[in-house]
Length: 254
Image (cartoon, rainbow, N blue to C red; front, side, top):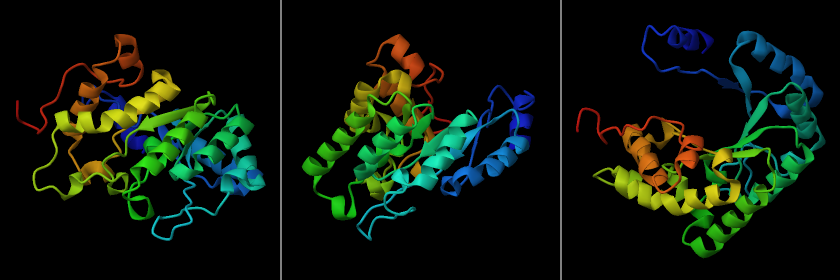
């Protein structure tokens, strides 16, 4: 990754700066023993390594994938590892299931010096045991997002909406969704997140290639632009961080 980033930074391949910042992987359950792992990652990329990703999704329903044990965010070892991360000035990318959002808020309050980046709209899930229960599920999700608002060290990625677990049918369609419909569909979820955390603590994410099951990157890029048009110029500069030009929804088409 460091080599690819250096090749991109040379400018030989155009203005894009791929992998200008790199997020690695380390197990925070190592506690204090995570420090040499982080030092090794930093040595591998001394100018681009910014932090690590440790997903802690847990749910009591077997239909929902769990990647960690219950209550890991409150465990002594995980918090010890997170304190090492904060001391080194590194960030934590994290994924949770939406019922865990209050746990994440408690974790964030306990480690105010740690920059946390929450993935995929806070782990909203509307399939399996959470299907056809939008009144209850969305209320729980909104409440969880709201608990993060006072935690100024928490930032949120607005994305992952193309994954089937979000409950939309786009991945089943014979004709893929276009950017205009996608912008309208994702607006209620993304607007609520921005309303709660503010544009300076939210960022669009592509989540590709995972989201490709539902739409193309061009369509998502354009949908984010369409959605953000209702915000002020300052807010648009904070959230989208992309060019003003709109891409064709399909490469090569105007």
